[in-house]
Length: 424
Image 1 (cartoon, rainbow, N blue to C red):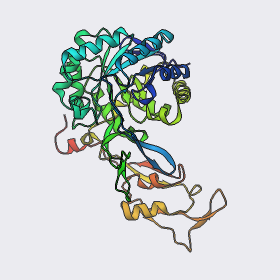
Image 2 (tube, rainbow, N blue to C red):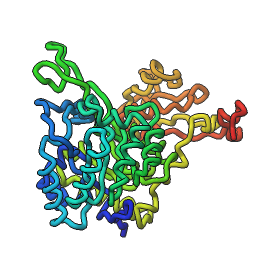
Image 3 (cartoon, rainbow, N blue to C red):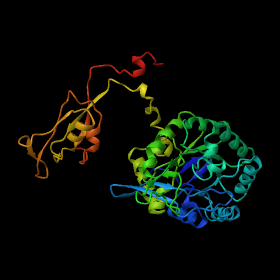
Image 4 (cartoon, rainbow, N blue to C red):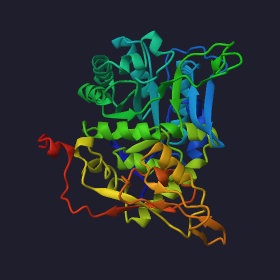
């Protein structure tokens, strides 16, 4: 049986699933309900000098009937006092001593202020500290959040301030709103961070009402840039986590677009030790962790992985620079005649958006009955024109109807760097 217990910087977590700092971890009551549901850890909603939040504060984008594919928020840190948050952290740890409570912290960029909040959070019972260097809106305009995380020197400096007094692991939370996140991660490591977490939300403006011309979320007819998260950001998170994993030696906590066990496993495969979830918990509630844990355990059992470490980072060697890819590798499309429904969508996509490598079936010939007894006209792949771009397989509405099949070019592997003499 797969063992989901995770060792993070010497701390034992019941599983790799943590709630991210945000609305689901705003109060002790929420965190305790989450632990009862099965979450292994929780990163408390960012603690600092309490602020006044706006109303409204969330906006979303839906896709083909799926709600909240992307979520935008202009909500800031906790609007509750430091004292209240720390008291509730103490209460949670007394009731759930084996679950991890990580205090997310953000204060003004002064050594004495940071060190004071670090000491107070640890005194309250926090198992670890997450330094919020990533909030892209509101706090960054005040010289905090992403204003710190976008400057390597500031990231290193404040991380080092925290480490001077911290007795628990220090995690630096990174913003994706930079040109090169690996520089920021390296700065955090240089400052003594025990781990990094990424990604924080992405700067965004969600939408505009074309009648009132008010952006969303609407605050008295106005709005502001906010933080973008949800399922839509997972590809960006995977890219940045894999990039950071190649550059630093300290652990990584993966964040971004995790809504099921497979998303979590992908984060782990590119280097994450644990993962944080926010939007999915806001959308579906805390019980989603049950399916996440069961699904991850089943995957691990199927592949004979006894521990998370058995497959953590396994994908990293396969993430290469484009110049190292084999240019002599070739695939072409194949259409399963028994599955095809004759919609001709592959033809339209290839003809107008790709390489004109599909021939549309003549409406007067080439018909056949598929497995459902439907009379359909199956398009034909023009092998000599197919470049293996995958577009037809991506747009096909029938699962596994179009597959990409490797063909033997008779040529040895050859990358762009090898062709141009830049290899090695």
